[in-house]
Image (cartoon, rainbow, N blue to C red):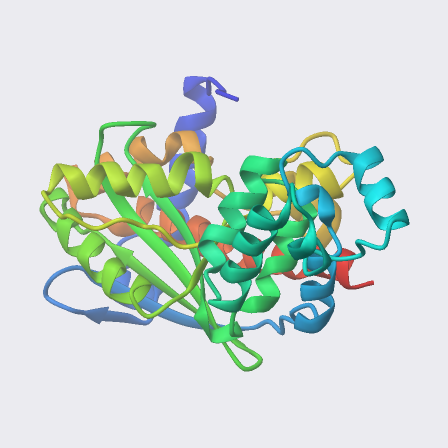
Length: 313
């Protein structure tokens, strides 16, 4: 949903940030590591994430006969009445044995991305069975991802935020482009981080973040595909979260986590704030962008944990 901000609101917001941060450089506002390629910011939070029991998840998948094309609720009930309780049983069925064998092979070979895509094609990408598949990954192999850009398509990425779990700690790393020449650097550093992971956690990342990054990879002639399972909180929340006015990130943050942001820059104003930073070299309007992105990363991780609880309980 696009929102048009009036000039008074924008000017007043800028004034507040200029007054709050003044001449403070990025190095004083954040724990910055100057990589000479971009600005890398690293901070830590306390977030404990508990994954579903992997054996229960396997049973849920194996007993979901409707995963197979041609098996609807009535057919599934009839098959189970005839003794076909799981996909393993259907390996003896003349009609369904090939497709059942295919799914079992994907499970056996731990090809989680293909399992997720298979479920999404059979049902939809918000189906709870996909959320269950999170159990197949080691906790430290997840990467939370959120980007900030200068528009909705065909424009530079200025900030890539990531989050990873290490025990009870959550490490937020943000790759910030101090100028537009550093965009390629932040993308390449992000790719270095992604190569060590098995799955992404995003908010609306299937439709926005991942395709956007993929387009920028093509722009720079980088032949790499982001083909990891993508656990998109926005999609799951629409099916699992009720009683909220909408399913935007900050709405879920407010209703489910009890967090009301103060002095946050709206996403639609980030390009305007960043261009001011480029023009003046003053970080007062870049600092809110970085804080906004960090909050989005942390909220996405916490919402993921809350959604996992709904399928564990």
